[in-house]
Image (tube, rainbow, N blue to C red; front, side, top):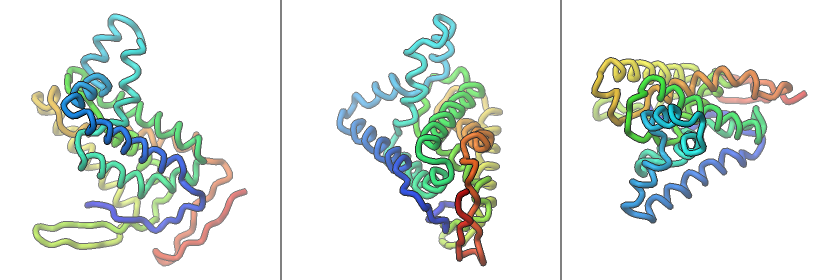
Length: 242
């Protein structure tokens, strides 16, 4: 399943969400511009669990070990990786920023990214493969959207064998199914010892980010914010602030 759009209109310009997308694109363009040195960049600024724990044994919370926790959120393996992450952020992030406010949303995004890194490190502590990508932080955005706009309608592309369907799904189903799949995939990879030290998708980062988004929403959502009311799955009336 792949989301195409939602039916919730953001009432405030999502300057932070767009800024995050621009920053991610900028760093990816820089990766491309340096050619083969991009691999060195990824190893230097990507988050490597085994390296992190080794550094903590020598010096608790050293700068060299903390920087990759944040810098890894803005690096991507390839163009498809970047596009898929930014597309999810584009669809769901503007609405979450709308209910939190700009600066709260930025801090929320970064904290969810940290939580996703921590989850991946806990479940895969011996990995020597750099963890990169904004998907962990974006998973936190999905968690917040899941609780904030559960009845929103998500236009979804659903390929079944050689056929492609376009269906509208409620956000709670789309995002709930997405989370369950991440949890199942993460569990299966954990059971496979070879995957524990290898590369691939950081499923536990997705799980950790999503859970962090759900838990942090109570702190970061504006107190005077109210959910929009969705009528007949299409018409939207906003209750307003205050």
